[in-house]
Amino acid sequence: MNTFTILGTSAKSVPSKTRIILHVDMDSFYSSVEVRDNSQLKGQPVVVGSDPKNGAGRGVVSTCSYEAREFGIRSGMPVSKAYKLCPDAVFLPVNMSLYKEVSKQIMEILREFTDRFQQVSVDEAYLDVSMQVGDHAAASKFAQNIKDEILLREGITCSIGVAPNKLVAKIASDFQKPDGLTVVKPEDVVDFLTPLPVSRIPGIGKKTADILKSMDVETIWDLAAYDVQLLLERFGKFGIKMHQMARGIDKAEVEERGDVKSISNEDTFDEDTADPFVIGQVLDSLAKSVHVSLMKNKFLFKTITLKVRFEDFSTYTRARSLRVYGSDIDLIKVTVKDLMREFMGKGKFRLLGVGVSNFEKVDGKQKLITDFL
Ligand code: TTP
Ligand code: MG
Image (cartoon, rainbow, N blue to C red; front, side, top):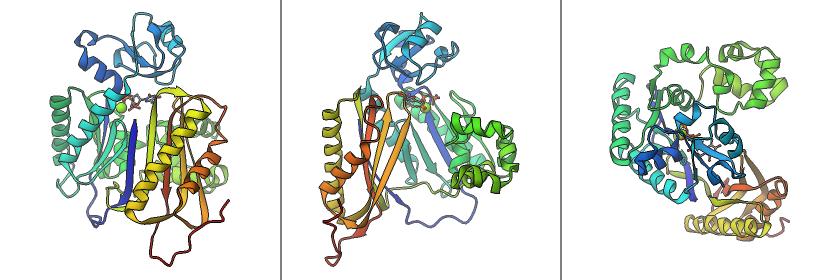
């Protein structure tokens, strides 16, 4: 897959009234598409993964149907383990080009509902509908229309969270999966969040949750009530961020294509790879496409970012900032390869991404970097 992204902030002013944000996330996306295209699979445990070989392969589960989840099968699990949990499941290989196509169609449907739209992964997006609907009750009908339209046109279900900000909308979309619709009114945010485990907060993975547990912090309530100074000491700046999130605070905007703040391009491999030659080629071609877009926009950049996703879906980004603005494609190529060194030999990759940000418009006077390395 090649997902080209130009991110920016909206030029439109932020409405002063409470915002109404939707987070839309497809249910068991890859497997829902497979079931849609083969009605015999309906109601069955379906596992989609790399190298599945009917359960005998050495690959990893990408996702599985909700029927398969009842057996304990999960994304990221070895296919062999999934087979042990449910030998009768249907094991299917990943058909990435099909899912990309369906994803594209779904994102087009969502864009018909609002301009204030931000795709965040192959199967999820945020919509800011504050300008279109007056309150959260109207937003609930609006969200139901989106669900109906996607089901009608693409034949798959999704779950939607409606809330005053992106953070709470995301947690809400996950709250009643599959085929869920959860509306959290501004006055209900605290009651909604506080009983949930801290792991529901995006960015709090197993490692952080374990550390928090050792500090007797298990629910979002515990985290919200914890001394922020101690969180800062233990987790650095992320401690403050966590504390704010636990209180349901998130000011991030739904980012539209407007003022360009970053340009990136990423590629999901059809087959996961650790081959240095292939990796080098992919990084070069990503750098090239990002550079073409930079030139079209007449931008100089200061920051170069690498994104890697391993076979097990663990994802890392690394960034490096230059001392002065640059425009040279080789700067991008050399920097991402240098950043990549940390990850080589650590496993197979399923996705690589290259991005640039921190822009300055070319004005003829800008000193270009030539001596950075
Ligand atoms: P998710 O939205 O995380 O999962 P999902 O849509 O399969 O299920 P849910 O109903 O819980 O939303 O991810 C979207 C797709 O991304 C998923 O269908 C397959 C892919 N994926 C992987 O390949 N590996 C992974 O570990 C995860 C989490 C997702
Ligand atoms: Mg999903």
